[in-house]
Each structure stands twice: as structure tokens, then as C-alpha cells.
Amino acid sequence: MAEETIETLADGSLLAALDLGSNSFHLIVAKIEHGEMRPVEALAEKVQLGAGLENERLSQEAIDRGLGCLSRFAELLKSVEPERVRVVGTNALRVAHNRHEFTVPARRILGTRVDVIYGREEARLVYLGVAHTLSDDVKSRLVIDIGGGSTELIIGQRFEPQRLESLQMGCVSYARNCFPNGVISRDNYRLAYDHARLLLAPIRHEYHASHWQDCVGSSGTLRAIDALLSQHGWCDQGIDRAGLRKLEDKLLEFGTMDDIELEGLALQRRNVILPGVAIISALFDVLGIEHMRTSSGALREGVIYDLMGRLTHEDVRERTVNALMQRYTVDSDTVKIVERRARVFFATARQAWQLDTPDWELLRWAAHTHEIGKAIAHKHFNRHSAYVLRNADLPGFSQEEQEQLAVLAHGQRGKLADDLYIDIAGADIPRMQRLVCIIRLAVCFKHVEKLERLPDFTLEAGPDSLSFTFPPNWLEQHPLTARELAAEQDVLAKMGLELAIG
Image (cartoon, rainbow, N blue to C red; front, side, top):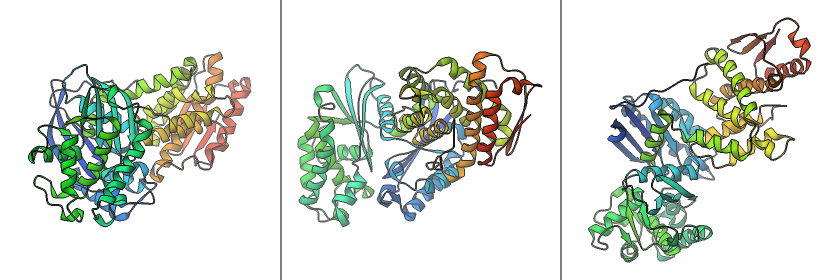
């Protein structure tokens, strides 16, 4: 199967990014002009998905609010080709055990998948969005994004992040946990502030002001604080300690979140502004921040720039996989053999099994990383490979992609674990079973193909079957491969797939 290529993005091309945050959903549609993106449409709705989290499960009401918002956003996305749309979910979807109850119907509504991203991947994309809005200077900068459920901190220079962190503190979660029923008191405020300080303590030395020269805030909450300080004359420009104290004192005069009436504060921010002030005050005090400026760039802009890279063959996921191979001293000859076999099997089964380009990308990355566990131990190396792929920080990859790579690594050999697909949405399991089939069969041939060129054989695929026909006597002359293929017949049958060998 020849490599699929994607042409360079032409001027006028439309791209879209949708950020499913814990507080708000943000959509941006951008047009490419002279290699840069220019926003042409932007929508935002306060959904407060994170407010519907109870015992790490999204309530049906929160799911319905989110899907209703996506139904409205979907109309604007009709003008953009599906492969040029990327949807990312952040903290609320990250921690929700029942996230598939939202992401599966969301995919049907939007016509594209929802990528739930880990905290450090969110931080990387935030930095990318901010860096493109700032002057290209050589100063080291700290970028802070306070979201509804998490806060991301990044130290970087120009377009390269150097340190990434994501902490479980956000405006929506703190409003719920520290200000029950929206009651404002100095004790409640102190609880939020102290909890933020506690979470910041382990990273205070690495992210202290001694390690950077400029501080930039990127979230809507921080821009709202910036605007309030300026409008009320509490700070000439940006955010500083003195201005934060004045805003804090003013907000603490109110009895409840609903009572807050402050000129310049949007109605939808009343219940998150005070938790935001508590978090940023703790950040200033713990990290030694004296002044912060704010940027219009944020996660959604970072997603657009990252998507531009993917569409022009500058995919950060390729660099991540190459780095994994080097770190775990992967045998490149074995990788080439497994990838070559997987490519043939995928091309044959693609139409009958309704597979697509992203499925091939996943298989190719699986071929490149399936043996990384051998650097830990040869025994059960597939389990070690799966553990690394599921739990490592892999820039560019979504949580779902890492879980799927882990399934392919674990399922490449031996018996299939009963809980192999536990992290996979039910609707995706049949597709994943077919990808597991392909990687298993590709691995079956890697030993014999190191010794000799495989003969021409016939390969046919049906909706639930794959059929091999080898030259006469070839299997008899290769008993190990014949035995492995026979064993695969039983394993694949349990997945409802028939493997015929002749």
C-alpha cells in the first residue's frame, strides 16, 4: 500500500479546533493565509461540564448540556472538511470514568472523533497557542492557563516548551469544593488558596521566577481578571500582586457568588472569578511572580497550529515515536518487517473491514513500538510495552490513542486478556479487534522473514474473515510459522474472526 500524502495547505483552506473545557466549550474556525492561520469564526458557550462530575462520573444533565452545545456548533463545522477538524477534551473528560457516554454521541454529532488529552499534552498545546501570539524573542517565559478543572504551567522559549505540568486545580472544581452553595466567606476563600498552595509545593522550585524572565496568562479567567484590574484602576497593565489584593477584597464583600455585581465582569463568570483569584494569588505567592501579562492565544489556537503540522507532515507524534524507539533501543530491522507485513494485511482488509487512514497510522506506530517492553524484560515484554504506551507522556498523542496503542502492544501475542478492551468504547471494539488481528499476524512472520524472503501468497478478506493461500509445501517446510498461524485461528475465532490457511 503506497503512503498516503496530504497536499500542502493552500491559501484559503479552512481548519477548525473545538476545545471541550471543564467550564466552557470554545470553537474556532480559521483560514490559512500565507502559511499562517487567521481566525474567521469563533463561538463559546459556558457548559460547565466539570460541574456535573460526581464520584468521577459525568451526570446525564452535564452530558446533555454538552451534546446540546455540540449540536449547535456542528452547523458551523459543516463548512470544514472532517479531516481538518480536531476536537479535544480536557480535565472533565480526562477524569470521567464514563466519558464514552459523551464522546461516542459527540463523534456522531460532529462527524469526527473527540481526542481526550492528558494534562501535559494540554499544556504543550496551550504553550503552542500562546507562543504564536507573542513576539519571537529569546526570553524564557512561564505560561499559565487556569481552566475549569486543571491548571497548566509551562516554561518555554520561543516555540519550544521545556517544562510541562498540569495540576488538579480549576475554577469550576474549586467553586464546587471550596464554596459550597456559592457561599462566599474568608474561610472558604482561604480553603481554596491553601489547597492551591499545597498542590504547588512540589513544583515550586522548578517553576520559580528564578527560572524564567516573562510570565504570561492565557485563560479566559485570567483575561477577565486582567480586564477588571484595568477597568477599576487597580493595575495599569496586566496583573500584579497589589491589584489582586484589591480585587480579592472587593469580591469578599459579597455574600454569595450570585450576589457579585462588579462592573466589567460578565454574568457567566460570577461563580468562577473568586476561585480563579484564589488560584492565581497562590501562584503569585508560591512561584514569586511579580507581574503577569495575558495573551489571547490558548488551547484552541494551539490545536489549530498542531493540526497544521499534522497536515503538512510535521506531526509531533512521529518525533515522539522515534524518541521512544531510541530510548528503548528498538531493533529497526524488526520494525521494518512488522510494518511491511502489517501494511500488506491492512491494504487487503481495509475495504472489507471498513478501516481508514487513522487506523493505519495506529498500526504503523504499533509496529514501531511493539517491542519497547524488551528493554524492561523479555518475559511478557508485550505487557511492559503496553504499560509504557498507556502511561508515558507521549507528546501529540491523545489519551484514546495511547490506550489503543497499549491494546495493540498487549494483544500482539499470546492469549488475549479478558480485560484487554476495558478502556475502549464499546462501539470501537470491533474495529480494534481487527487491528489486533493484523498486528498479531504481522508479528507471526517477523522471525521467518528475517531469514528469507516470503513467497508470493494469496490473501483475501471478507467482513469477518481473512484467508491465506501459500505455495505447495511451504507451510510444511516452515513448521514454526505453521504452528503459530494455527494457534492464531483459535485466538481470532474468539473475536468472531475466521482465519483460513491453505
